[in-house]
Amino acid sequence: MRNITFILLALVWSIASCKPDPAPKPDDREPPKQYSYWVVNEDSFRTNNVKKNIGLGACAIGNSQDDNNNCFSIRFHVGQELPKTGTFLIVDSTFSGSQNIGYAACDFRYKNVYYYVPYPTNSTFTATSVEGKAQYSLPPTWFVNYYNHNDSVLIHGVFNEP
Image 1: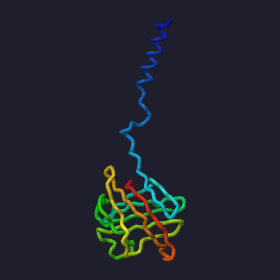
Image 2: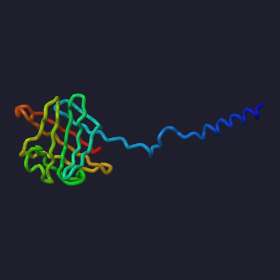
Image 3: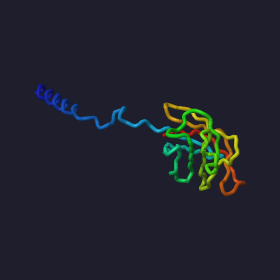
Image 4: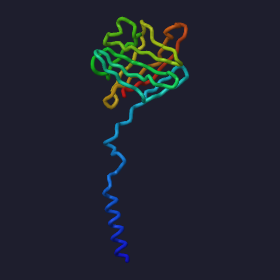
């Protein structure tokens, strides 16, 4: 009787071991997206729902889907790839020189209000490469309300290419 039980257990084990593993292997999964995070005055935000947009002569990253309409956009006129090194002067996207290769157009929407850095400015982004992807560091920088220049916010953060 023990021999039959042993044979049945061996048969069940061999059949069970032939089924494919439903869990994906580590090589099959997409790497997790890096979070971008920023602080507006005292409010902190973070998201990994960042999109990259490569167009004709312009590259951008940003997020546009947020429950409180708190989002950002960073745009470069540098060609077919996001820059991964360098320092870029922040300008308003409506500034006629914003297509200069050394400039980055940047704006934020905070509590349904559009904020930007008016030109001229000395504010900059620093680009670095992290695991082959672009990362942009923004030191504390004053942004003004597009419709009311008496309203301003202090923003700093780190923004990662998805």
